[in-house]
Length: 338
Ligand code: ATP
Ligand code: MG
Image 1 (spheres, helix red, strand yellow):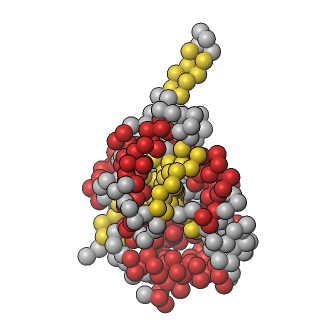
Image 2 (cartoon, rainbow, N blue to C red):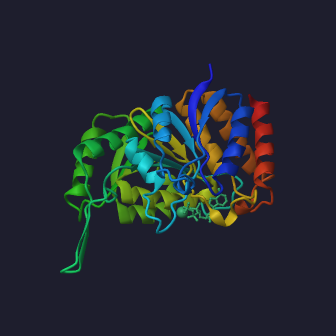
Image 3 (tube, rainbow, N blue to C red):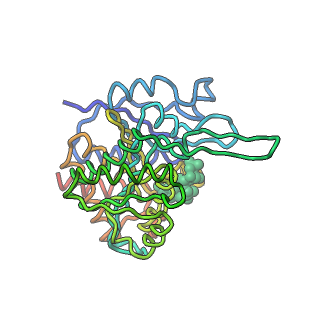
């Protein structure tokens, strides 16, 4: 039976990389019945609708899983980022961002294989902010709850266990932020005791950044609060070839929205030059999530082979192929594997 999933192509380069990705999924032989929504973000606001129309939220709640392209947040147009709204309304508390070296890409390291697990709903992004005009003092509250910390850290351990990973690093600043980072670290230590097969360590965020740009191969799973996780995942994307190749997922207890780390890249939109690698790897994560392991592996292995051979790569990674040429070449490789 066909999988019932939601598709949000997004804007900017979104529709191009989404088309490329659909072609690749089809080549992998997975049967999907998509509920496709093009009206979102600025697109929706122009039509007098909310930036995140409720039929999109309903569709994902009903179907459980969505594949999403980037949606631009116009500066100064007064609507909250659709990406942030979706994560909050659907309670997608785990942001999973793998960073894996691609053989054939010229980057400073060639053996990076780690995953950042970023808490997606609280911390410094809780939205609790004050400005005292009398005293000219600004406050942003970093709220960490026991429940919020427990569920993201447990998610990280469970994911590690399910994917045969052996090491979890918890990133914090508990020496200074004794309450918030302190609580996060305490809960991490408690939970680590429940997973004796997984090696656990904690690392102070500034030191971890230094370690990651000198010895990234020493890291496996890294879990952290919202802001630290956000910064860490861009740092680790940079270690392995940048935004064009880095996948991502937002996962909650029941629902999941798979989206690449990159934004809508308006500078290259509509030119058939965007790199669909990030989106196709994001789709591979989604396929694994819905139990289509074979198709997911075929896509990942074909991508790795394309980079290893170095043919038909896009501009951002030193090639001269277009988005659609890349999609054709990848689809051919995938079809020959399944
Ligand atoms: P947004 O406001 O939606 O985040 P942005 O202008 O910040 O958009 P990003 O997508 O975040 O753009 O990426 C920054 C730059 O990286 C882009 O301008 C683009 O040049 C490059 N880039 C991002 N994604 C890709 C991709 N898939 N292929 C090629 N280049 C990309
Ligand atoms: Mg951006």
